[in-house]
Length: 402
Image 1 (tube, rainbow, N blue to C red):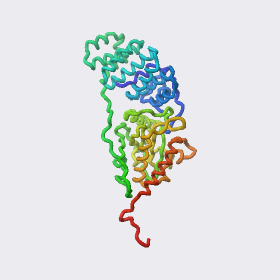
Image 2 (spheres, helix red, strand yellow):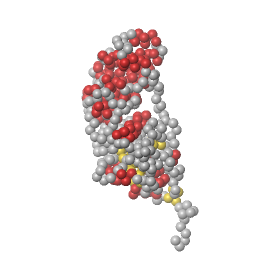
Image 3 (cartoon, rainbow, N blue to C red):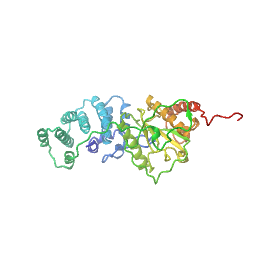
Image 4 (tube, rainbow, N blue to C red):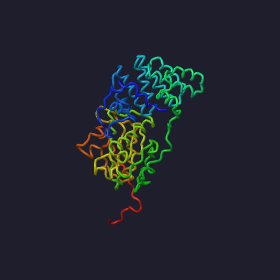
């Protein structure tokens, strides 16, 4: 039982408050399922709406933006993020109707997480401020919650208050399969050398070993299959390019689940709207410093333009790092540095072949912003220092006179 249909029948005016102003490197943010009749406004991702809300001064408008973000996150199945934004909306207003709508979202979110006592409390609170179909839906979800707690008599008493129990919407709520707890932790994360057919170790011997880098596999974010008929085999790898995903409102998701959904959204846009074989990037680094597997490196990416993709590993940082937007987190910087050094060792990529999107295609884009362009200089220095630490093996020791 997921939090989707609410946006399609409730609060259309709230969603209309926010307008998508620009497309990022990964294209416009789109929700999992567009709401009926809302078209463009329903295509805004929860992370974008939350970013806009957090930059807004305290006001009723800020509260409505947080409420719109909670609805969008609900549509995407990101209940933890929906709860976070709903609480922000709750503490920002004393309007009884808005509070009731927030309570309804919180009740459904907690129900989907199987936190039944919390769900019951919020659903009961929402009844006082909701009217019409919204009030009936709240009652229906309360019936489901009580039945799941084995409070049969109380559930049937509430069910008798339903004015149209046989209506398609109410019947769908009452008969839908019970929610199951979502997976909060992924399975064991393989190290980088086991993903994407990367070589198990570098061809040269380095003086200092690098820490293990964990990479979250495609299976965790439920990646769609690569379309082989559209894919091109990767040629010899000799360079890598840095990007940002560029959502207009930035990315503020912190949980694995929420970041996985954002990556899946990007893949759907790349495959569906762009017609690409897969997500355009080979690796993704979220704001918590987690590294995710994107397109297998055995296939050429679609993160640069034309021939610029040849032999080029694409790395994207989730977020918008344009001027006056977001800044790289310390964890992102550390993970990106380790990833770049690992790839540099495995594929013998020199500091001169580390690019940002705007550097490999000057004049075509501003991606990934000045902050990442500046940090790329630091990474090039690290690559140069790392390559200078290569130790000569017995087979590489130069002979006298040569």
